Structures are given as C-alpha cells and as structure tokens.
Length: 317
Image 1 (cartoon, one colour):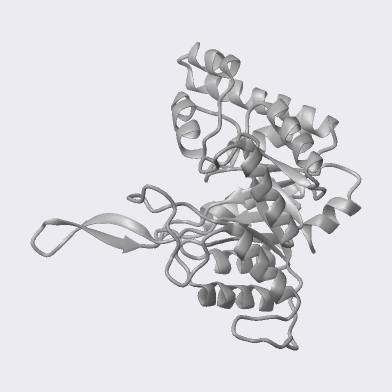
Image 2: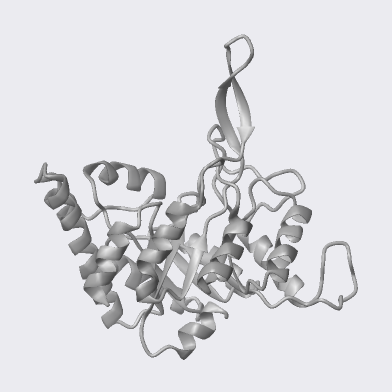
C-alpha cells in the first residue's frame, strides 16, 4: 500500500524507520531483530538504503596497497522482498543515481514492480570517497529529479527506448529527500527549495527530510515549502543522539546542526548511559511536539542501532 494512502487514511501520526543492509558476507539477523523489536508499534513502512560501489584499500599479491571498487552493502531488493514476506510490512527501497546506468535502474524498478513493491525513495546518492563532488555514472542520471521523471514515465507505461505506451504500467508512489538546513551542495536555501519543487513538479508524491534536532527548522522548512507551492506530505526525519562521538560525526556526515543546549548537556557528562538518556529524552521531546503539530509521520534513522528508536517509541506511543 502506498505511504501517502496510509497517511491519508490514518487517524494518528504514523512512524517509519530506515534500515541499512548488512555488509557483504553478513546475515540479516540484526535487521530482522530490529524489525521484531519495533513490530509492536506497527511501523507504516520500512526504508531500505541503497549503496553504490566505492573505492577501498586492498593489497595486491605483492602486499602493495591499491584501490579497488567494491559494493560493501548489496541486497536492497532482496531485503525488501524479505520484509514483505516475513513481516507483511511495506518496504521503501532507496534508488540512487550514483553507480548505475539508466538501463540498470530501469531493470531494478521492473524487479521491484514484479515483487509488488509500491513505494520508492529516489535520491542522487553520495559521492565517491575520493571525489570532490558528485560525478554521475556514465550513462546514468545526474540528479534526483531525472530519476523522478523516469519513474513517472514508467508509471505511464513509457520505458527507455520506447516511444509508444507499453502494456505494463507501473504505479509507484515516489518519495524524495528534503533538507531543512539546505543540501550541502546547494548554492542557497532558496535554490534548494527550487530543486525540491522541481522534483515535486516531475511527479514526486511525498518528501522525507534529512534528520534535524531543532524542530523550528522543520516548521520553517515546511512553511517555506508551502509558500513555493509544495503541497505534498513532508515527513520529518528523526534520530536520537546517544554518544559524544555523534556530536562530531553527525554534523560532518549529514550536514545538520546540533543545538547548543543539547551539546552542552551531553558534554556535561562522562557517563555513557546518562548520555544515551539525555539524547533519547531530547528526541522524545522533539517527537511529542511534532505529533502535537500533526506531522504526517515520524521517520527514524536507525543507522543500524534499534534500541534508541525503540526507547523513544515506548515513551511516545
């Protein structure tokens, strides 16, 4: 079932979460354990991230270090199928521009359609580790709006290389990312909103935001989005901060600010359990305010750790 239909038909604020595929060679046990731990709260959907191949350091037969391309976390399509069949929960696979040709992406989408998957989250994806900025794959898409346009065409029965409408039309619900604190590569907040509006105009049905820790930034973002004509649901992205290390890592990796008040409170303690509780309580406060303001859903970024999300859910539902 489409996430926008679930939002429309629900009399309460829904919750969703994002999981990360295991590294190559590892089992799905941790992912299944995560889902089992949140089942009682009835997640509306579960996002599954997609990861492109990237350069890693390996040694050749002489012991010299060389760079090699490797996809560390494959399996997104298979995990989505497993989630449907084992748990009866609708998955949302991420589809990214980086690392795939247009034809490869179309083939992935055909597989997802045949598996009965209704929802997508379309993203540009991360740049390679040694790239100064995102460089598109040869024969691939450069921007998320191009992905949106392509999927919208497939929903109409228009496939790559065909000028006629085909018999098999898709019906994907299309999600895109929004950035309350601006995408790192955007020239300005205003330009970033224009980019988001373009994705909506191309056919996107809903928005999921990057994580934030100050609700006012989300509220301002929604207000500005509505002013430029974006009317689709905008789902806030949430994550509890549970360690001092995350105070540095999260802003660097996700380009989001940590409120001074939260940083001071976490830095005032050396007790790891107390630090976790501080972060969880802050997140609980965020969630309660967002629920009070009737957001479409709460989207939790787990980053492979289920317990903080479960602790928050127990305090808000």
